[in-house]
Image (cartoon, rainbow, N blue to C red; front, side):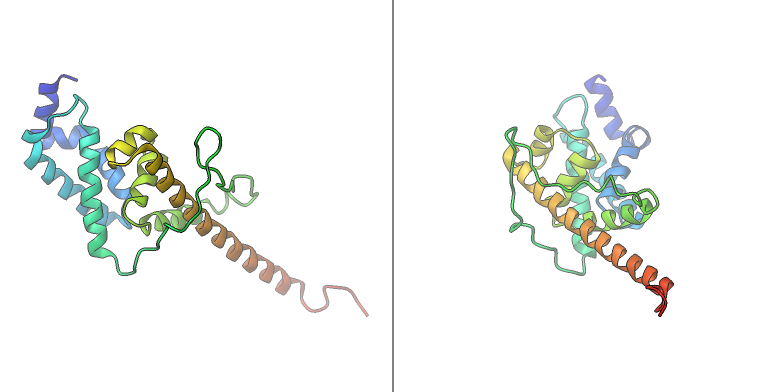
Length: 206
């Protein structure tokens, strides 16, 4: 779209909300613990965009600029709400294959109970993403959820491409550990219920 049209959209509250509101809220929700925080992030982001619209000097599509503002506002809300210290991911190992893509991510898609547990899995993953440290959370949301390419996401986060991939891989490893813990707990509970159902005489008669 023409640059003048873009600038007008950034200056007009109704145009801004109509053109970019859905994407702003989606990003805000994925970086927040709940709907209320996402709404606060969105409101703060819209206000910040309207205040800074005349300083925008980018391409005709300002989504990169908008992403950056949204991430900063989400980070600020997250810091205000956070009650627990963020887990450190710096010690997680990072290995890359021959194409420089991170390796070692577990595939849970073949579990027969995956579909039945989809809602609970999504809730656990969403909470785990929200609990990631600043920088790691943004990496997952930008690339894995929003589909922003590696190079563009690295630029948005002011990281080298290798630095972004390392951060993303460590975040994925942490989320994998969350899933593994979830499945271990789920399987243990299922085994316990099955044992209770069999009763003490399930192994045979004397």
